[in-house]
Length: 127
Image (cartoon, rainbow, N blue to C red; front, side):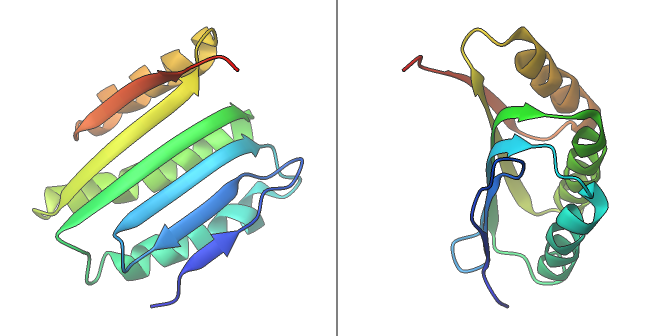
């Protein structure tokens, strides 16, 4: 299974989906013009990965900002991870958010409650 690597742009996050490492990583801003076409390959990759997942999948979300359309796609990814976990696979999610960003902190808390799988939240130190 191919590694999925997308470099960040001013409107899309950095993405690393690595089967060999059991790592899913999204970092940056998410406000793509066509949110479905940006997230479709990520969802497809995760669907393929779910057929033969690693014993542990570590997922890290490290957003600076995401728009409403992106939040729907993030929820779809989270639901796929929830299904993976329900099948008995170990999934750990880390949610990083800017230290003084109550909206991103709250978004992480809401997602944590919705999916009910191991979920750690960490404020990022200010630079």
